[in-house]
Image 1 (tube, rainbow, N blue to C red):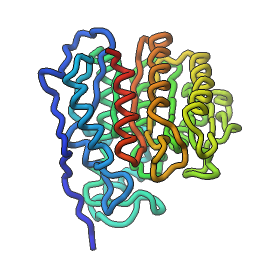
Image 2 (image 1 turned 180 degrees about the vertical axis):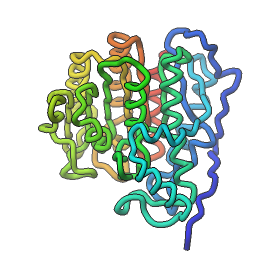
Image 3 (image 1 turned 90 degrees about the horizontal axis):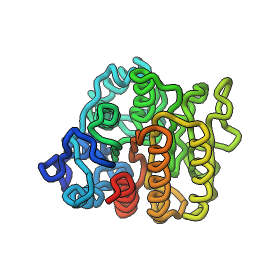
Length: 342
């Protein structure tokens, strides 16, 4: 039977209220977080692991933080335009997604990423919200920004993959180079899965400095991200892959992250993007790592400090994976708190 994707509604619809809005004047480390009803639209049907239920606990806790003394503002999700997608994706692929979205059946890849009616429109919000966060940082509205439903790092220029239709991280990297006179951008990825869409999308680009910590690809999709992969051509030495063995926990993560931090600092990027997938926490139904939310606190705190050291505090975080709702809540609330210190 053909599935018709409903216009999903979060159990915890979050609106930007007077209590959570910040003025356009920068006041210390103020953080914008994109979350609202449209955040629920990027949700695959039939009990697929990536569905809107995984973020409900996080949404409830985020709402509480937005009414606390922390400088956190919730912003409405924003859909991207087709021309934004074309900064990274091929026109033929965008057209394929649009056609599949009308049909509403089948898969967008080889079996991980199902189509549904409205998948194209739903997929515009992760990209648009990440781009809006970038714009607000550049315009001085916020010091930092977090798009929890972004970080869709498996989508390639010409195809979907690993639950990811359009790659908002890659799109915003292209946007940053297009709009700003930047020489180097850092992309740090701590999702349990290797960020192959970003890595291979910029493998030849020496301007994109990548540090990626993930579970060993011999045991987990997408089977990439080995230590010898450091970039190609002029970009050799601008990428760092650290693959951790299954059952690795906080100690192994922190040891690896210290290497990433040093690597990023040495390259002195002018903007930092963080993909902070929560699927590395112990108890995730898909992966085999055993972090606690301490890993996300540590990584975010260190990158937050580094951003103020090397790039005027310009750091934008994106959510990524995570299929245990309690883990998603713990990891992403840790990220939110570290980017908005009390």
